[in-house]
Image (cartoon, rainbow, N blue to C red; front, side, top):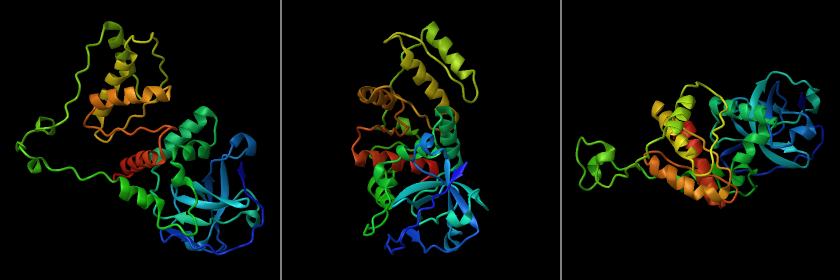
Length: 294
């Protein structure tokens, strides 16, 4: 079921940043279904219908970031679906306010993960997608905003270009990156016992999604099994990524240091609710660069 909003609002002109496409409410025969961070259980709609003004028809796609009217306010949402018609009276469907043209379009694989999480936890698509994004990036741009928050995040947190081996002092031509002077070496994992090896083989024997419960008391070596499994997953795909959930924020520094030491050639991004806004933005920027190949 899709829900449209019928509130009438006074049209006013708002000057938005150059990176945003903003147009008047022009009739269109195209619609989009938007994922918003609103409670599914209260509203009963996983997605919300909005009309696409004709001037925006060429810039709206699945994965686009948009600003939409919501009651007397505005919200940032994600285009989850395109549609030629709406299940409610078209005259009651409001139009998109803005397309955030400088925001990274989200790839289909990201939406697959979101839909899986939403179904698994019985939540709306927007309830899963939007809270994972730093607050500044999911806040509608102010009328006097100086440029795009996405562009500022990319410029501020862009990683420096890695120096070529030949450019590094004492570099040895033809040597592997991990053999160059000053290269960070991976920490050596401890040998696994029989129980750990059995658990690791059970994890590796399953293709696709499956639920596993690794039972053991504190200090029994469960984390080491996970790290060995992560090593196998990352070795299969040069662009592969792994999401590791931690049960308590207090455990994050220790585990992050352990993972960084084990996988020095891979970037590590940490995200939790106690991170400062700048750090959260940096992490989000890294995730989107990886998703888009930046």
